[in-house]
Amino acid sequence: MNPTDISQIRSFNRTVAEGIGALNEHFLGRGRPMGESRLIWEIGAQGVDLRVLRERLGLDSGYVSRTLAALQRQGLVAVESRPDDRRVRRASLTDAGCAEREELERLSDAVAGGMLAPLNDAQRKRLIAAMAEVERLLQPSLMRFAIEDPTSEDAQWCIDQYFAELNARFEAGFDPSVSLSADSRELTAPQGALIVARLRGAAIGCVALKFHGASPAELKRMWVSAGARGLGVGRRLLEEAERLASKNGAKAVRLETNKALGEAIGLYRRSGYVEVAPFSDEAYAHHWFEKSLR
Image 1 (spheres, rainbow, N blue to C red):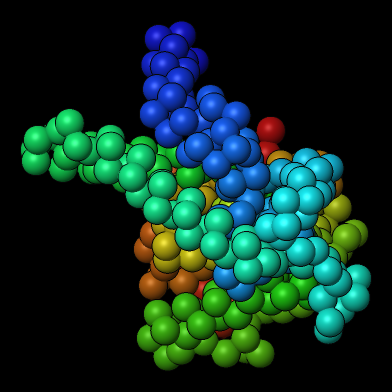
Image 2: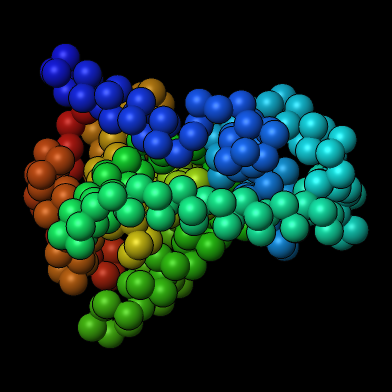
């Protein structure tokens, strides 16, 4: 990477940290570090499971436990087992915690206002537009990709969204029972795998593989949520799938797709997939692709 680019990013990070007061142990003048205040904000009025909190912020369990313990000592947070599943721990704000969150909201608004106050209208518009663009461009660095149990709630949600989109976009709709199978057994090792993409803990996409030893692996169930498109999620899902296919001994990856999915077809071609003769009897396929894995 260009050293000048790296230097600019580091300079930007320092400026933002200084501007929001992240360097001060008493963030926003509340007598606690920024990490504790951020957890108060993330827990919110409804509370949150600790697992979700860790995934959303990308924090290890030890740090979350220590920070929550500090907030408990301050009387701001309560951590209890969930009534419907005693194995799941959930954090919620006490009355004092809710009041503290409201104060943090007020002070954070004041900090944001302080950034805008010295600027004229044109400068404010430029800054807000630039911040929105930077936030969107930074999101890919926060994405996480992992193999997931295809029967999990999030995995099933992704596949349901995938089916719903195909049903809406295909000329005659989509019936999973007519399509070639990729059930949970086929997407569990050693037969296959399902990769789920997450952003701040929320599932935003998936891709599945069926393994056949050294023969080409089958790529299935490629889907990206509408709100995450344009961030390169599809490309990265493909790369993750190809690495996993290679690791499992496949020399190539194959897939079939429908003519209605123009964006996907463009992605496959840009990613090195070559259109080949039909190799399956998929009822909804108009194009068949293959890519050799080196």
